[in-house]
Image 1: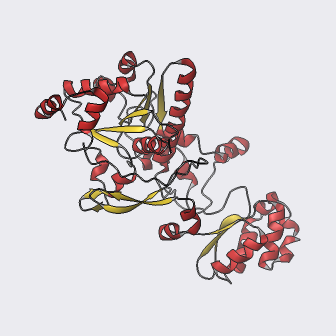
Image 2: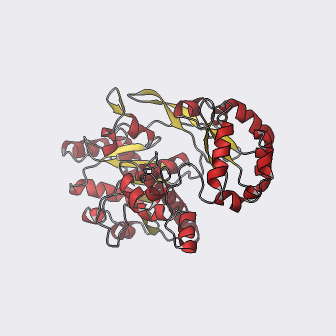
Image 3: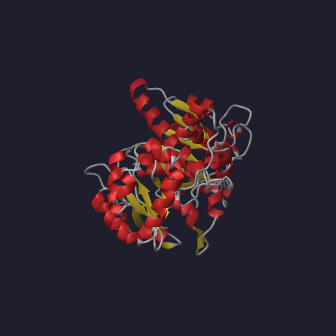
Amino acid sequence: MLLLKNILVLDFTRVLAGPFCTMTLRDLGARVIKVEQPAVGDEARGIGPFVNGQSVYFASVNGGKESITLDLKKAAGRLLAQGLAAKADVVVENFKPGTMARLGLDYSTLKGLNPRLVYLSLSGFGQSGPYASRGAYDVVIQALGGIMSLTGEENGNPTRVGVSVGDIIPALYAVVGILAALHRREVTGRGAYIDLAMMDALVAVVENALARYSATGEVPRPVGNRHPAITPFALFPSADGYIVVAAGRDDQWQRLCQALGLSHMAHDPRYATNQLRTQNVASLSAALAARLSQETTAHWEAALDVAQVPYARVNNIADLVADPHIRHRNMILEVDQPGIGPMLTPGIPIKILGEEDKAAHPAPTLGGDTDSVLKEVLGLTGEEIAALRAQDVL
């Protein structure tokens, strides 16, 4: 996919949120040069699981990038980084606020070298505010951002969402911000500085919980696997597992009752509208659970498919890999990762008519592209690169 062909991204990010952002830009066709610390690299290279000593975690969020090693504590390393930034369209970094300024790689400095530069800082709490200096990981952001308070069993403890939404949601907002800034640059010729906080991004997606609090004054709590305002919209046990049923509209409710052999519930005044169904969720859910538990998941899938009621079995990851629809959509791909071998990776969810979306790209080896990048982008000679290496700059 070549939507961002000719866009050069200089990637100073580590671990998850920043790398996921820049990998998404790479998936869209940008060239991404990842700057890593010599000998050590991105901290994610030390996070398991490992195959042949190589981190599958790192490989999963750095596909298709090029890796160069620069010692940014040395003046020569910083000068090389500045030279690369002068050629770049985008710089992305996710250090603590103030770190890039101390290195002479902050937006104010690089803007002088490249006025068209789009520069994004992705931090836990932003570049300003009472929490700006605090460190952040996904679980911290899920807690402070409110999502943990909404997740879990009814009357149970707050629960972390099973994937790192505290990183992934900010990463996707970062992509949106970068694309918007690149679009404006085409009109004005000016670059931009984007201050994106992980916590801000999670606050932005608490959606109806904030609306409900505003309307009622009541603090939303976890309600388990159902929706607080749409009924039925929940997980139910079947005879051999679980099935999700989502019949939010009145016509869907009527068809659901017929499909389940519960026609009397379709005419029960307690369940005539979604609002009434939600008010009487306990009795409604008990009746549906009792009926759904009498047959297998496959039985109900067939029945609800005919009834045109939204439903789903609960796929585990092995199920996801084998799912024929997921395979048809090219959303599970295999990549030959150096040092690891074949590994599965998600495909690109953005499908552009007439453009290839099957490509899967391996993550770079640490510093494996240092020489080629310095030659191609900065025009350094082999002798100059050898001299820098002798000084432990690379």
